Length: 113
Length: 115
Image (cartoon, each protein chain N blue to C red):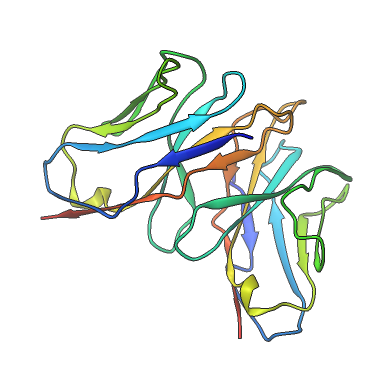
């Protein structure tokens, strides 16, 4: 079945460092891909998405490109801020017919001033 | 347009009691999904409903858990005879469109603690 694998955390970076969080997926067909962010004690906020191969999603300085050949959707940001500290989840929309989301286990990011 | 509403935000139940979690989808959305997040884990799909119909309940535990989305009113996730292992955050999401393939919008979650 469909699955999402993302790098384990925690990831600790200094402010203004470059961020990469790896995400790969397994799915039949071409699912839509998402990155969500969760701040402590809160729900999930959509960060960005891509619906087809080679699409690039971007928001608030974060980017991710849908790579069909490597089945990947890595999240990047050129210069992180303390306020980016949160848990980041990679997800796909299942292609099995009911459109449920399959989530990765999440990667906790901590940015130090 | 108000977002997805969930209540209560926090719920404490003793073992053996019932928990009722409510979710009001965004206006115009007729598809509701429930997910569970265990401590330090990702979200796991539980059930997908449309008005008055359960479409996919493949992620629901076979016993004690049930869900509904009536013609009028919010969607309800019901957990009977709760146990400590039910302690988790429960998130509801809704989507628009006729097929359910639209982007899902998540509520703030209900954090259930079983003592």
